[in-house]
Image (cartoon, rainbow, N blue to C red; front, top):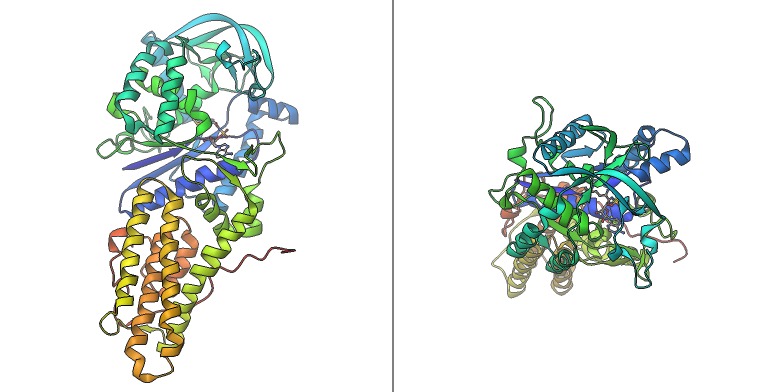
Amino acid sequence: MFYLTTAIDYTNGAPHLGHAYEKVLADVIIRYRRLRGEEAYYLTGVDQHGQKVQQSADQEGVHPATFVKRTTRQFLNLWEKLGVHYDGWAETTDPRHQACVQGILSDLQHCGQLYKSTHCGHYSVRQEQFLQDRDRDEAGNFGPQWGEVTLIEEENWYFRLSEHTPWLKEFIEKHPDVITPAFRRTELLNALERSSGTDLCISRPKERLHWGIELPFDADFVTYVWFDALINYISFAGYHAAPGSGLPDFAKLWDLSVRRPTHLIGKDILVPAHGIYWLCMLHAMGFADAHLPRLLVHGFWNSKGGDKLSKSTGNIVDPDALADKFGVDAVRYYLVRDIVTGKDSDFDLERLIMLYNTELANELGNLCNRALNMSQRFTAGILRHGGPPSADDLTLQHSLTESTAAYQAAMDECDVSHGLEAISRHVVHCNGYAERMKPWALNKDPANQERLASVLYHLAESVAHAAVLLSPILPDAAAKLASQLKLPSLTTLKLADLCWGLLPDGHAIGQPKPVFPRLVVEGA
Ligand code: MSP
């Protein structure tokens, strides 16, 4: 089983482009694994507790439960609009999740992993954590990333994180597959080198924060939002679920026979949340090394010039409005095309339009138009394999084999951008082939009928393969192409079916209709 989760999004505001990127990327990866013939499960959801939510709700004068209900809807609507199909949906206010978190807390308390203590220190409201001296900048101040910082003295519950960090260091060193890309693993190891033997504060007094999961052994406290949220990856996978909960079978999802479960997260939440807290939490719960997840860390979409996309800088890009204006295909395509998984990229509307118009509307659109329209006009929509392949035909077939292999190699590594580049290479090759073979000229002389059939077949077969390869990224557009080509349903076609001859001799195609209309921008 390929079990993939994403970070769960904060519900203290509306979804932004970074959220959309991660969920679309996960959707593409899951669809690709299914195309490979694997069983796959995608869990995503929302992080509904914590101080940020409580503050936003207070500002509006509504109860946090009412507030998160509304913001959660915005996420659900966006995923529906963007064609993000998940199998499991995690909401941290779900009583099944709360029961799981409380069960884990009780177990950890019983085995002496939790203790109560008083701490006086600087507290960041924005990041909802106590700060250490190492969090100060060179001038000795706490930088703007921490927001408002106040000095507080408080009694709280702590998790004996420091007991697990020596194990964690060794574990990360021994298992390079656990953190990808590799430079993020180095970053985590460096952070572990610097981290002193501090434990993790896992509670917040109710007088300061009431919006959270109550500690099962101390009703004056709620659980720290990160401790609560991280558990979603197992609670919604059925870990310690009550019979009849409707949650999946944990052993089936957390199946280690092929690979570790994958958590897809952004670079900002590797250290310390996932790379340190989460792995140590699982270790404390008794998960063996072989049962720990893999962290796949993606980069950030920034605004042009490298600035952070954030509400505070006013640089927010609304993915919902973007999809309304440019269409879902253009948004999905751009979000995974113009960024290399693991690296950052600058969001650039001109590039969104340019990449869609060049690679989809012009190149692929042109190829579809040639393959389907000319087949309808010249051979009544019937595809024939034609005579023996010419040298040009063989080169085209070779280009397809090479592009498919490159696509597969890239997609296996979740490198969607290079996967798409590989498809584009073949599409460009096909358009060059059409220019040279000139089917429109061949059609003028009945003596060329066999050659004409061969050329049209090569173009149509290429479109059929491209539709299958594109289906994880652009499922709707690929389904439209498949239907025009009268291919079997894309859900039944697998990567292994992609050998030359997917379209049988004598295959009848349907009526063509443009799938990638050019984006026309006002004023351009
Ligand atoms: N709620 C926590 C995660 C808890 S997971 C147990 C959180 N939420 S978030 O809403 O701030 O971020 C959700 C995801 O979106 C994270 O993986 C984060 O890295 C990602 N992104 C947030 N901004 C982003 C960009 N500008 N670009 C790409 N991804 C970004 O952290």
